[in-house]
Length: 272
Image (tube, rainbow, N blue to C red; front, top):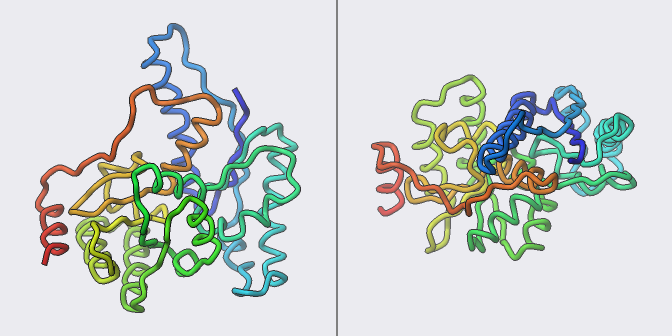
């Protein structure tokens, strides 16, 4: 089994999620296959970065040179993972994938892009138009749009400034642990931003946003309140598991929400 490297710390909660989910699925795979003895888990090495430094190194749109410090900071983490023996590596964060191709250029080990994993999940469930919600850079990123486009998926962020601001406010609330009512608030943002006749498909491109749906944190995609959500982190983790030979034996569909009052409120709002 390949040794996995994780560039983490940006943020630390998603780093914990990647580590715990990889180990949990290894245990589940062992049980599903009715194997005896201790379950085999992949070796994992983590390089944890300073999120404040990462943000401070952000460059300017359209100016590649301004991103040099950012690219080098994250590339250095990948190189240290490589020295530590990692054979496959990932970044446990959405926003740095705005510069993924530049960061991993010249590395000798396998890397898996969150963008390819999330776009692949969108294609798998038949989504052709997807609304992306996350931090400002993520929502406006042309790199994200290009990566999804390679999978035949048209990606767009909220066109309404108020919807973008409400998304950022909601992320901040979730970071402070205020999860009550978050799914309903997110549904309202979707209603204000979705301009197509089909049922909305939303890419949760921030690890905090998935906390609005505590019952679905491990699912690559799920339905809630008449909206299909794609969890980028879970799709990315699933791609890592597949690459190291830990696969779910049962086929996975889109998990449905229970008929909770909050889900019904979200659905009713979409049908108005």
